[in-house]
Length: 380
Ligand SMILES: Nc1ncnc2c1ncn2[C@@H]1O[C@H](COP(=O)(O)OP(=O)(O)OP(=O)(O)O)[C@@H](O)[C@H]1O
Image 1 (cartoon, protein in one colour):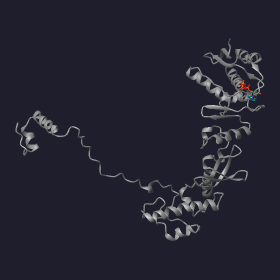
Image 2 (cartoon, helix red, strand yellow):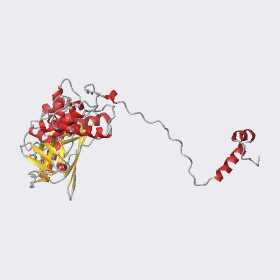
Image 3 (tube, protein in one colour):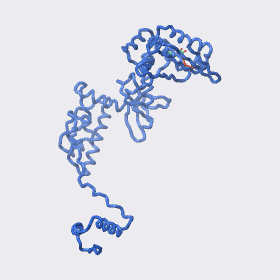
């Protein structure tokens, strides 16, 4: 046992030696190897992942013929003639390196030819570009493609006068983009000053999260479109954006309060925000806060009053709601002043608490005001 012969096989040994002796032998063998040798990695699997079969996921409208691009087609494309491209666009046939080079280039060219020759985005049904878009039976072949191409071409451009304007890309290179502006002018700008524009179908959406492209000009454009229709409120997810109309707008009053109370309306409004806070408080039994912020003259005080009116209408009956609403006049009489931004600027911050009982009626309020030098609490 002590003299293990080099000719003894492992199998023979295992039948003769105890497990302790086998372990000892393996330790001795292990000592012979250099200590810093890393353990061998497990063998890598030799099988390769299968490529997904392209046929399975083709949209039904996509028709691909199996022939590879023909040389005569390629030369026809080079001479700017339109050609029905019968290549396997996503097909399985492998091309040689040279063939691939030639096949890539004419395909790219054929797209450019379509854009240059038809600036309105209408593309011949024979175009290879067509097969890249699914066809909606209801919209029709051309409408779908036209829409898709227009969407790609409409951009926001930061013009030298210092504002955003929409335009269409006429040509695009790494350094320059030629843009046809909506006023008919053509300007050349760096592609860095371009941002994607949303299709006009999204102009004036209720909630900014519905926009496909959420960039600065798109947000401002959407707010402007809504403002021009007297919709001064827009949602940005859970946040309400309020634009100051500086005029009377037909967005307030008893009828609208009832409509929001009875959930007949859900378009963005301060009433909807106040209603959500009230409903949340009653449902979960948790205090709710509405934070109104903005620059001087933005309409914070007016917005707070509108929310208070709604809550007073919800929890009225005790008469206390009128007292709460009247505090505004008293506070403004003492704490407001005319500034260059606002004729009736509140020179203090306000924290208004309205307390509701379990019967959903107003049972108290606490108003705290805060200036640089003083802190005045009011209680009911
Ligand atoms: N929803 C509204 N509808 C009509 N006019 C409004 C509305 N909101 C604000 N305004 C007009 O804008 C003026 C300024 O609004 P407000 O005093 O609420 O601004 P503010 O943000 O509280 O300003 P400050 O911070 O200076 O006190 C109001 O006096 C009113 O004329």
